[in-house]
Amino acid sequence: MFQFLATVIPSIVLVYFFVTLDRFPEPRRIIIITFILGILITIPAGFANVYLMQIIYENFYYSNYYNEIDTFFVGPFVEEILKFSIILLYCSRLDDFDEPMDGLVYGATAALGFAMAENFDYVYSAEEFGTTWQDIAWIRAFLTAPMHASCGAIIGFSFSYYYFYNKNIIFLIIGLSIAIILHFLYNYGYFELIVISQIIVLFFLFRNLRKKQEIVKKSLE
Image (cartoon, rainbow, N blue to C red; front, top):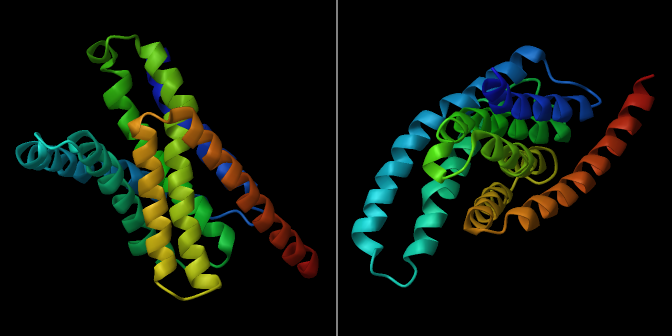
């Protein structure tokens, strides 16, 4: 039971945190659907990662940059594109996607659904990594889950910027690219540095958007 709770609670707590930061909360039904979609993309992600792993091994194993290529494409490239697809194909089409904060909330929620599903592969296979499930659970709760959430929020913010500020597709590409690069650097070994940097960026993004929400809220009172 404790192992199961350690696997699912971090993502659920973080979703609650992101949702409650929104002065105009999104419908619970949409949050749940977005979270479930995040869980479901682990299926194509698994197949795509295995396929790319094999392709990269066959073509780049003797390259000096094999490790970098493998680390970039197997995980970051595949997973961030799939998170991007949830916002593109579902969230951005919603009538409730009606203010900048929504992109961050939807992006983080989708990413945390993915992180929770991925947790099961790691927490329940701890012996394969030569450690205990408790150690894996702690690492993923305080480092990996926040990393996924932050990457999702960055992608979501790029959609918000595109829809509400400047309809130039380059902003969507930039948001996706930043998420992929940050995820790559995290997987490459810069765990604490990436997560701390992401938290700082999100702090200022959320603070700025909440101030704008406060202005709107006061104008409606």
